[in-house]
Length: 132
Image (cartoon, rainbow, N blue to C red; front, top):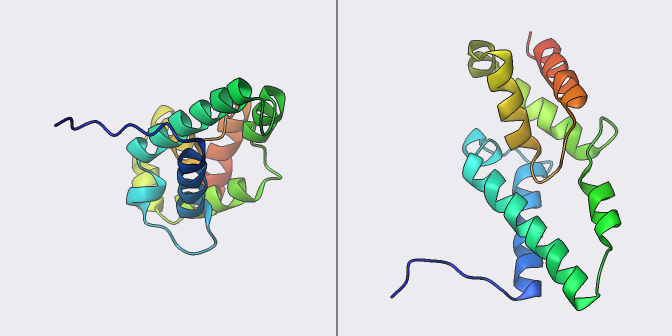
């Protein structure tokens, strides 16, 4: 018996994708263990990449460009604001990290979205300001 989880069905992957987004970015409080989990972030990114590939192969859903645009988070997105608030709520941990560790956490917190280096700096600045 294999210990691997293999999910190939498009609709199961889509359900997992939506569930992860709900856990990470719902208006209800989410624990740092889920919101800031590198494992959940990795799963979110992998599922999103697989969905993009499946939609391209099946010629369904959004185009690669639509996904790329959707994944490119900016300050106007609801998820950005939630990530700022949730991160700032853990100010003791946040203040103990270096700027690089903060950026690493920001990438995890914002997954499955993509964020530029410039926006990572903005994220760090906004959390620093919010957690004072």
